[in-house]
Structures are given as structure tokens and as C-alpha cells.
Length: 115
Image (tube, rainbow, N blue to C red):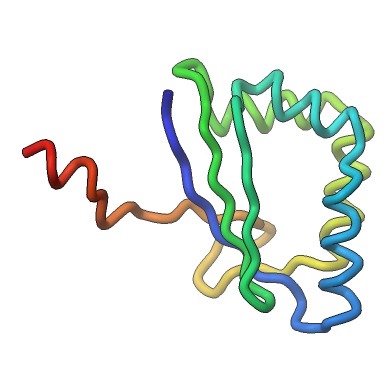
């Protein structure tokens, strides 16, 4: 199993943040299916103010390129992503059009203790 951590900023507007949170309480089945088909075993999203942090646990076959291809094949996933852009904004230093950015792991208690 692999673990990826990503970050994203939301538009800093409390009513929009509330709407975004509500959308994620009822994610469309097609979006969930696309996530699972790409090899994501579990996904969690945490929020602090307008900053989001996502943890994805994936199978060994997962790749971001594979996920992108699967997402591109689904009109419902593309519609979901268009809706989500209303609430999301690019992270400082990200590429144009890039949403979630991969974070670098700098500490692991388990790895430190195993040495």
C-alpha cells in the first residue's frame, strides 16, 4: 500500500466553504467509483479554515496518470470537477490549472523508530 498526502486551498469565503463541505457529504456515486477504479483504497480530507489536506491510501498499481485517464473518461467526474472549481483555488506555486498538490513527507515516527 502507498500513501499520498496532498493540499489544496479553498476560496476564503465561509458560505462557499460551507457549501463545499456539504457537497462532500454527498459525493456522487460516479465520482466515488472513479476514485476506487483508479486504485484508491481509502481517502480522507481534512480542513483548517480554507486549507484542505487529503490523505490517500492506494494499491501498488495506482498512479496519478491512471487516475487522470479514468477521470477524463467520465462526464460526471468532469462535471463534478467543474463545480468544485467554484470553491477551489490554485495553491501558491502550483502549475496553472493544478488543483491538489502533492506534499513532501518530512517526518515519520514509525520509520524513525524502525532504524
